[in-house]
Length: 154
Image 1 (cartoon, rainbow, N blue to C red):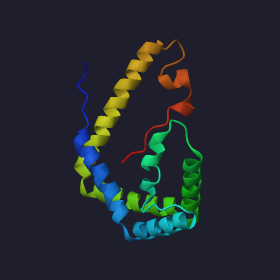
Image 2: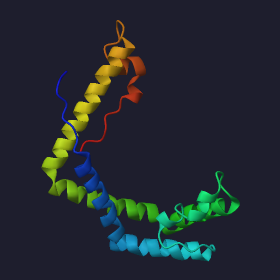
Image 3: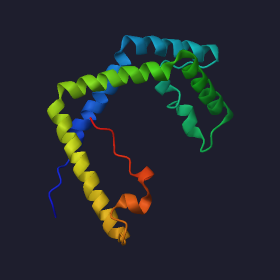
Image 4: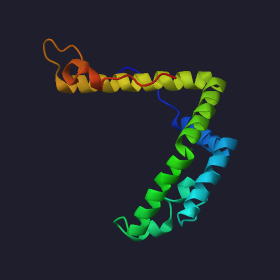
């Protein structure tokens, strides 16, 4: 079997964690989290940051969503919309990710090559298992082009 580069998942996950944490320290994110928290308080719920709402221990007491849990979820979504939280946080996280990619270009080139090799090996296995017939030269021919989108390049 052909050698397939592997991704150093611990290193990659470290980058993911670091950029996530950096995005939460971004001044615009800190501000919008405060606005979201104030909006939630106005709706009758006391949560400091968005991750606190779905992690509320009260929700573990029932297998089904309760009326209070649904009310919190609705307020959460409403406050995220009202404050523009998703756009602000996404922009901050993207900026942090791009900075880390630029600072660690060699690591991310290796991650990309390993990912591409893994996907290529997986496609080959799927094509072999599907026993591609005449006139269907690839998995794309069997499944249709719309399902064969390439992942975003780093």
